[in-house]
Image (tube, rainbow, N blue to C red):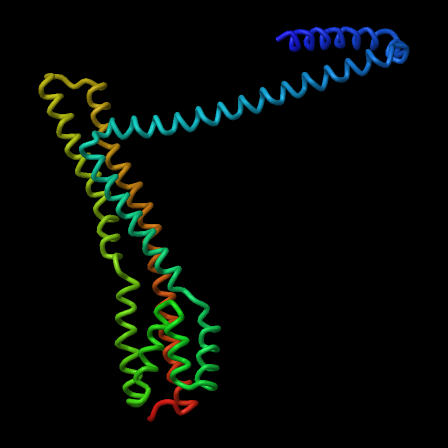
Length: 279
């Protein structure tokens, strides 16, 4: 505290000194002892450092206050919308996000460098035959490697059997890629419907209150409508978030399916080229 007071006193003295210097001449500063000048400079830098620290602390406090205000506002709106109707919407959002994250992780793990994998399979067929290619497919993750393994495993039964096996197992892999999407679509449709249901029920309660009061009060009507519409807002927000994830997952699945089809054609061509399967 004493250091702060002394720093402020020195700063005030410096201010008056600078005013006097500007009105008179610049000789007073040059005639002053070096120790006084250095002490004044140190005090100025100390005040500047303290001001910067105070500004940083103020910014941190403001950020925390804004964050707390947002969380508190969200909780308040959740309570105003009636937790009985808001909770099902929240459950739809949480389960939908869980399904979306699981699908995104699964699809990203299923994605491989298809061109590099095709080159490796062709090299294995050329140098080690079917068994070497099967070992490569067995040690590679993803649906494309699984389809290749099924096709190579039936190479001794003819190229027609290989094509049937690839098509059949490709359908199985496509089903695994699309697993859970029907539930995600259900929650996308269910969230706004639950919000609308809460809105309708809230409007009914608002009109019942008007009937019981025997008069139309603007405060009663506006408050009831506001509370009832909150469920619709939250339902629409949940549906929008889940819809974005759903579209991303569908586009990812479509891309993998296209790669599976192109790779299957390449596998059949390679087997015919190196005479792995009979025509």
